[in-house]
Length: 379
Image 1 (cartoon, rainbow, N blue to C red):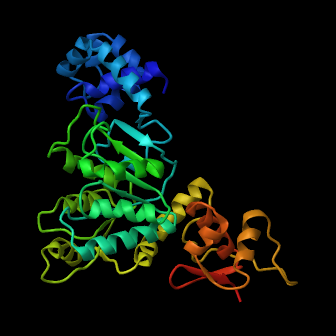
Image 2: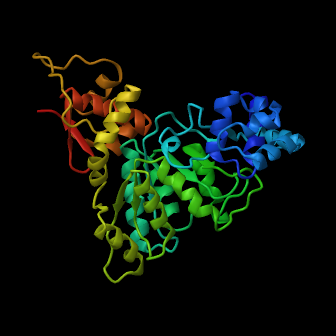
């Protein structure tokens, strides 16, 4: 979007009661946001779902100076705006009921990003924090982007784990991007910006309010293939995220805890209701492998889990015929099996690049995965 388009999108996003369905109906009729503001009262009222009240709000809108000021701030702070037509707008999010008409984002987003949400109690136990950080580290090492809400407790542990795995993570806020909540996560937010993104549906100068957090939970689940709940009380907000996930046809996972721990009440309830039990990262990867295949077919890159894919055999004489990254990585495995962390240190590659090359070598039959995220040459 150019600056002029952004101004009109911002204006439409501030008009109370419009909603994404009404906005889509207007765009279908008029083509661009600017033409909406040039339309007459009768033309606006003729659009399905746009009544007289909304039409009057559009015609009376005159805060263009406020929109120019907001755009200047966004440009200065490197905040970009995404509508549902933008290539970086998460495609899975656009498919849910009532997706945000506009997203505000800082950091970096990727097209067709493969995401898993990990959420839980703000009052996390030592066990919950440990399990969350380990699980999210392993997800990141598999090239999965970890999504959470940057709240205290489990959410913060999820982001830290992904960063420890040298992977990507996305935090969905319940406020404008000018307000980091809780404030003690300011340093964590800076680290997330270096390896992922902060996103929100709320414009700047929007404080964190209780009603915003249940609403933002639909975004956390909406951009993800599944939601993992680590610890949750009986009335935890994490159960709201799991409920959204079910409504959005996403996978729901839960990590069991001690039977007498308050933080286990919610997760055990989910397990009784059919959530998938998680003991290791493979429990998640196995469940979402079919979804990964569909996503990776669409973007024509190797899937993270390629079980059952047709493989090429090595050539009959000595070393396989490999080039570039595949050859360099295969040679690192010639002498002994190595863990992913060790391979990252040896190659200096980002985790996602390494996982892509490992997958290709595994698909071609040159290497095989061992327990504990370790790889060795195929015998």
